[in-house]
Image 1: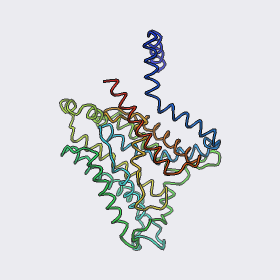
Image 2 (image 1 turned 45 degrees about the horizontal axis):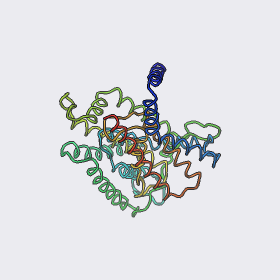
Image 3 (image 1 turned 45 degrees about the vertical axis):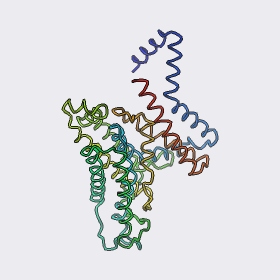
Image 4 (image 1 turned 135 degrees about the horizontal axis):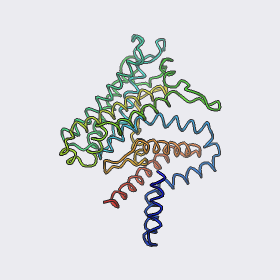
Length: 354
């Protein structure tokens, strides 16, 4: 790393004045979003000194860990030059299923009052299967029929939302939010991993770290990961090289669905009360985090470390905006601007390289 930096500095010194100006201009433009975010974080800290206090930092890390599985899932679909608009609704469905199957046995408003106590691992496997099926539908439709991921996942987003609404009408629920979760479940997700300065770090931070490590291995150390990047870069060339393009595309969406199922399982216990609105617009946060982290919509480009950085930056900004008492309505506008600017910068980098 140090050697590459030294070589790069020598190359810069060797440039003439015009080339140096062009280099620094390109560097500033390509990193303008990061520069703006750093300035914003400094401003927020000045206006609200408690923003970067240890308790607040732990909260930001916890929020990032909860959002990480979904972002990691969406990232693979972006590497394939696609996206997944159904991610949030898939999280919502799996969260509601998790919550309904893991309510306290003596809870007065239990959705299924005659349901016996179910082992946590059984429910976890069930929601992972639900996510995988949703991913399979998306991946098969994209790979087999050549449909654009935007259209396919928009359709499955609506389908999953309809399924959630129907599911919530079952038993004694009558469309109400599902709460009263079993202590086994909440302790498994929100139990204290360890404390820092009297502030508890929840268990799901560990799960977020483990899932991130697992995805790093899949992306960087397996044939599947290499095939994913090859298909994202150039599907025709990948096919000629012997890569099964359809199987790879389907696999990426199935893996994304599994991550959404895990995200829903964590989210259900984290928020404690789950309804049809659970998971609403979660996919936008995931897409924004990926693009900020350098996962390119032109395909074949992305790193797990970048996704982690993107999620952390996004949570830093939105937590800071809450510290400044910015309205939820304005936060939606800011989120949209961040996505737009990040995509514009990404496309500019692509055009310069091209």
